[in-house]
Structure formats: structure tokens, C-alpha cells
Length: 130
Image (cartoon, rainbow, N blue to C red; front, side, top):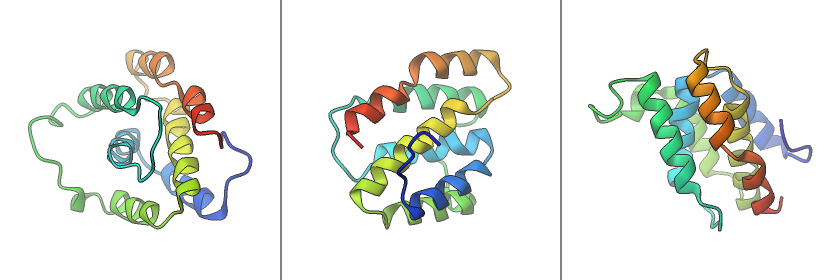
């Protein structure tokens, strides 16, 4: 984990994310980032575009079908738990989720390089002031 002062709810959700496959982590991150539940001055759209590019590489059918989130029960559960968090906890979880993706080995050198260069988790964390 990146943050040392995480609250219990955030730690529990991060542990749930740890058990997800890489493609599901990316799906969840896109879903969470598209509706953060708090305001930020940071350019979240750059993260969303990056993660959508990565998801296209991981799942070639991503843009061809409408994603039915009901098929991903774990993602739905994590997303529902995210909605119950306070604003501060949401900020912490968004940082930890992106950091989890940043650290994850997708077993694809192109994806790993792209994420390491373009997913500026540290800048995002500092912009949130948490």
C-alpha cells in the first residue's frame, strides 16, 4: 500500500482488489474513476483513457460489447462498498487502487511500460492532499 494512514474500510477493500485478475482491476478502476464521488483538480481523464487502452489490449472484445457489470460479482461488491465510503476514504481507495495497478505485473512488457510511464499515481496522491 502507498498510504500508511488508511482506514479499516479502505484496507479491507484493497485486500479484495489484491485477489482480482489484472483485467478486472483495470475494469474496476475505470468504473471507479468515471464516478469518483468527490472533486479533484487532477486530470482523471488521462487515467481513464490510459486504462481503456490497456483494457483493449487485455480484452479485445471490450469495445465491441456492452459490459454487463452483473457478470462481475466481485467488482459489483467492491463498487457497492466503495459507494459507502466517506469522501476521504474514497480518495484513499482511489489512490490505493491505482497504486495496485501500478505495481501489478500484467505479464506484457508493453502494458507494464505504458502504465509505469503514464499512470502518475504519486502526482495524483499529492494533488489530493491526503
